[in-house]
Length: 185
Image 1 (tube, rainbow, N blue to C red):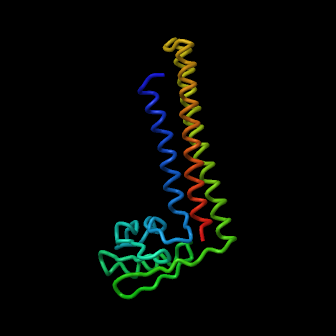
Image 2: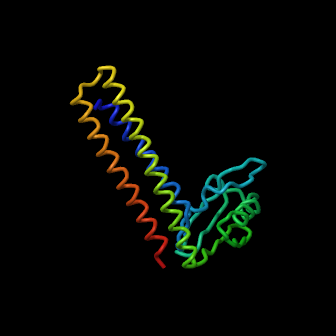
């Protein structure tokens, strides 16, 4: 398999895994994690702006998030965006920062989140398999156009399968780590 082709295929698979990591970072666990709210959109002077661009978000302890806006005039809009999000947080505004106490997850809610993790992992696996399918089609076309010998095609397909297997194992591993975080009390 052409080295460039192999690297490009591997990069596409890695992009699928990076998207999975981003998706899973947005699923909350019982522990405070700034990544959960940093992508919330806040109305800032009429423009929808991600919270991470408007404020410093920290987790001073495992059950609390602290949001400190760079511009105090945005405080009300940040609080409103957090309240209206589907996280179910009840932020408290002290005039200069916002504190969010992370409620303990119920067993049922944990199971819902675990199901969501499984769904996201499956979506990532499908994306990886789609990359493999596209690469397979490219290899078959190259073989048909006599750009590759039968042996080269066979070696390339084996290498592609190894890449795919590794990416799927990585996706499952990422999912298992997130699942353990969610189920941890």
